Length: 389
Image (tube, rainbow, N blue to C red; front, side, top):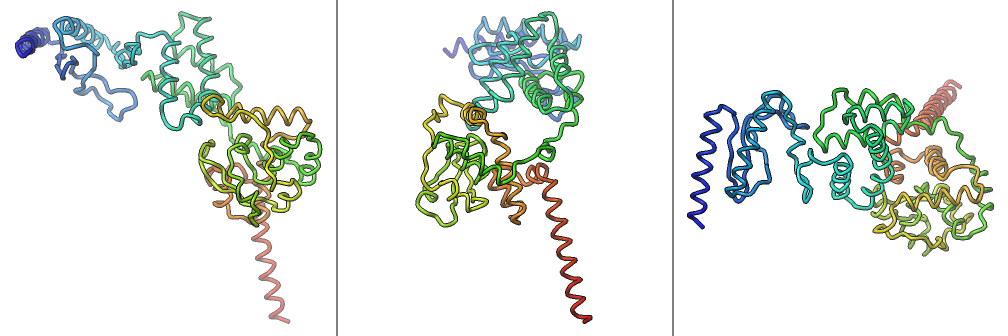
């Protein structure tokens, strides 16, 4: 075995001597049982380096005479690409069991990207994000590619984005999905996708007419099913997202906890957090101390959070509720502002950041702050008037 290894090393030295004599700037390295190339290569996409520098490039070739022969061929091909500036890192990024990423079809590249995306972080939330935000636009991309097989990837992406309405959330989500694919493929687009982002602001709640508390209570009676009545009451009282209703610890509520606190479990979109009722009286109005959730599939290994949330939307439409489920959440948030709950606490209960809380509910937060400031000034003037009298 040692003789075979030393013989391969001799052959490797001879190949590298030929590459050096040809001034190709590429050498072959043996690292264990694999062969790599080393040379002055362009910066990898996504790095902070701006100039070509010495780097290794994996060829996924075995350290055998046949592998060495193929490595010499690859070294000459890469040297030619460097010379005419056509070298692309993505052509040499490998995908397990599929080979070089750059040699795959676009459909195979998207499938490889999906596999990588779903293997990172929490599986249930990542799967929901993929299905709701990434998959729809990547499917559209593949549809464009099938209709225009001669178009390059940048042209397909730009055409897709231009067909989406400007300054809307769907265009921003599409940019995020397509930018993620480009990063995975290590493709640098000639026109940054930030140019297509637009001026959409998530602060759409300000433009929405939220239901009054009396309307929320009245709509409860429109739901004949006790289980879905309970879902409605829980969302209205605690400001829960659609799917969160089915992933809560209601033990304290059922056992008569005087504050009515519940816990949203870690399996949800934003992880574990506690929530208190606003207003607390709705615990009794909606009879929330007797849990009676409808029986639906909540196994996250087979059902994504998005699908569970869609069931709630369907029931709202079925029973003719005159507002959307998320309006209950926004109404709860505005209610906490009127109660004077600190923004940091309300944001934590809602499972989002203080920055998002301020941006989404800016209108009502500003009004509250103005009212408090006016009240302080009037109180001060009243004190001053008493002193003068």
